[in-house]
Amino acid sequence: MHASEMKTFNSYLRDHGIIFCYSGYMTEEVLVGVGNAIKTKLAIEDVERQKVKRVFSIFVEAVQNVIRYSAHYEEGELDDGPAELRYGVLTVGEQEGHHFVACGNLIRNEDVARLEKSLEHIRTLDPDGLKTLYKETLRGETPEDSKGAGVGFIEIARRATHGFQAEADDDSKYFSMQAFV
Image 1 (cartoon, rainbow, N blue to C red):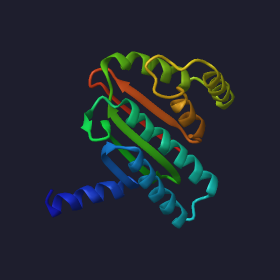
Image 2: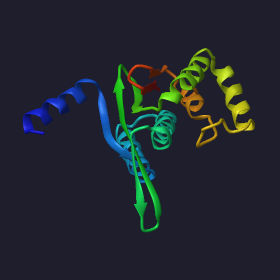
Image 3: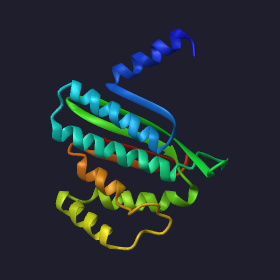
Image 4: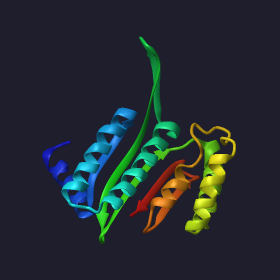
């Protein structure tokens, strides 16, 4: 990328309030490193501690979603066993006084309908309903094809005090999410 293109890209990010942008393969190490950078940046900005916790919690759930479910991945065999890297895009920023976390990644064809159904249900719930669903999900059985407890999007919706948008696009097989705190 030439300097002029990089400058244009940088201006685009600033113009859209993006304070952090990552596109690439995500790992637990990336989660920890980027998470620390985000917490430091928000602390430097003197953001309210509770808001920092909410942003960080959403960030963790978003990155874990990419690590576990992105359909764009590389796998191979290393000296210490099998390895897998999953690809996604993540941004953190601020617009109109609210911080946001946004992410996106490819999803498998067979996941689109299930994901949309789950998100549709989550969108209909108020805070009490989200809390109840969260507890029920933790007590229930792990969903089929789930690599976690199945509470990620519920947790994001609970922490997103100023809106949560997510969609699984059936045509492009791309998932995107944005949560505002």
